Length: 377
Ligand SMILES: *Cc1c(COP(=O)(O)O)cnc(C)c1O
Image 1 (tube, rainbow, N blue to C red):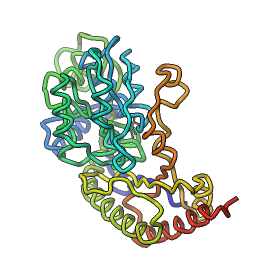
Image 2: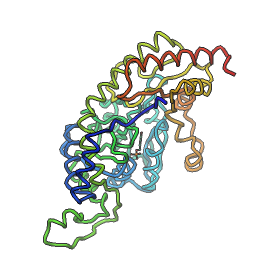
Image 3: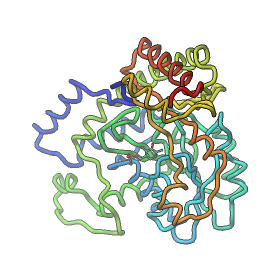
Image 4: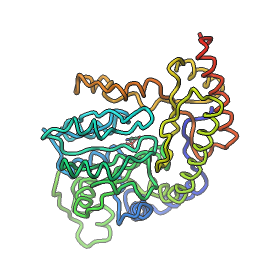
């Protein structure tokens, strides 16, 4: 089966894991710090905080900013559920914002503006599929409304611009992301005081960690705040250090494959639309396409699957999930819903060859053609 995404891991990661095991120190230590510095460096930042997931990163950011009960946070609904969940973790209210258009499925500034109230405190931007929103426009909006800008950058690691939009950015190293540590995440926050609060809350608010106490004369510690256990370990950090070396090249391969997909789909399946038709900075995390209205998506999925091609949907809108229908009833986002109904994500990862892309597009043209003619039943 050709998968939508695949981790690129091998001998260097295995060697890095052996080294950690032989070292006798498995939990947060020197390798985590080395990874934090290397990850920050790649993004032109001074430092970063490695954590156990992007979900933890988002929670820590909102927590450290003091966002809480009574506060509203603008979020897209075309995202993974974690973006909105983090808002609920701090007992604030997620306010779902529609996308700009079918071609630009990023949160709409005009819609965001219309949903602002005196309680609105922050916005969480998502670089959907890896494509970056208009930074100057969002910064102007945030300044005008006095809002904190936060990036859920799970789709866009490795770009210098990411992590420069607002107060902080959250990254994911889950197995299907552009780089992976199996599970893992990081925070980039340029303000040192904010970064220190996030680092403290990551480890129970303890004044020193186990590893620091090892090298210190004082084995005691203090707890200065109610924190969490959102630490990363040395095994994951060691994988991350290796992965960071590959990330820039992998992102370039992703771009080349996306350009080829765009060219071939335009030629062979002109009824299929590809979002982000205008050039825009991207980490090319996934390859979303929009099937024609007349096509039956399930038929297309089944036909591609029978050809050994996996597809997925990004995303079933968060406001339509049972949890959010209960917590945030009555939300209607026509553009997000229309997009999510027609969207299909086709395979994109650095192990795919240009020959494979040709095969996927041929299978897609066939599947969409049959489905549109109504012969699929
Ligand atoms: C994957 C993802 C997350 C969650 O990342 P984890 O590291 O699994 O917690 C959050 N937001 C978006 C947009 C994602 O794609």
